[in-house]
Amino acid sequence: RNYQERLSFIIANSKATGMIGWDVIYEARTLLRLVSACPCVSGVHVYIHASYYHDNAFVASRALHIVNGLNRTATFPLLESFFKYQSEFYGAPTRNLSRASIVDEIVKFSSAVVGNSYHTSIKKGFNDTSTDLLTRVSFKYATSRGVSGTPFFYVNGFVLPDTGSALNYSNWRDIIDPLIGTKKGRKTEESLHYFL
Image 1 (cartoon, rainbow, N blue to C red):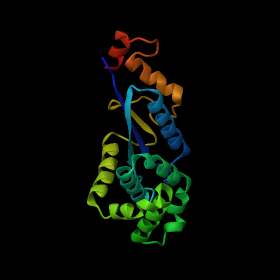
Image 2 (image 1 turned 120 degrees about the vertical axis):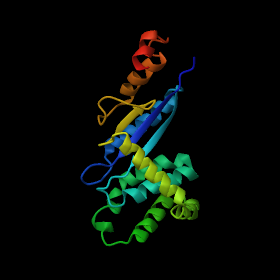
Image 3 (image 1 turned 30 degrees about the vertical axis):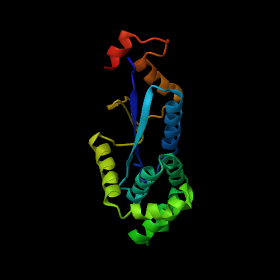
Image 4 (image 1 turned 180 degrees about the vertical axis):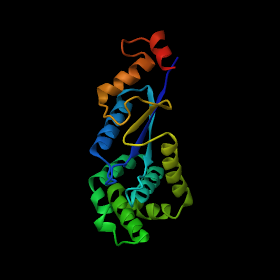
């Protein structure tokens, strides 16, 4: 039998500052490496849990959904850029800006990261109710799964123990390998029963 594992990764900028922590980006990079190295992993789904502490987290989350719909390979670079420059979209720099001005700034920022040829499409995406719905559903899904911090991990729909702790590549292999029986090069009944 061919076992396929699907990982879910929920990013929740839940700190009091509302900022995404470096651990989240580190985890995302680790998961991307795992997907590349482990053909048994059918994919990683990232849910953005926009924190109510962060005034513009919902707009940034929506930009990620828009870009993901336009070019999936550009989503992670945009996420990294939001992390790197998040101080431009939080607190004093945006305190006196209207929502429309903030959307315009995020459209410009996103276009600069993923390519200016996407500028019009990203801008149109903010007028598309489906991107609003995607962002809301992502938030509600994460909330319904009990997300209370960052990061949260699920494998095949089940939350991993010690959620919120950093996992390196080796930790992830320790989780995935017993599921597919590759740790010792063969599938074992014990490993399958443990996780089923």
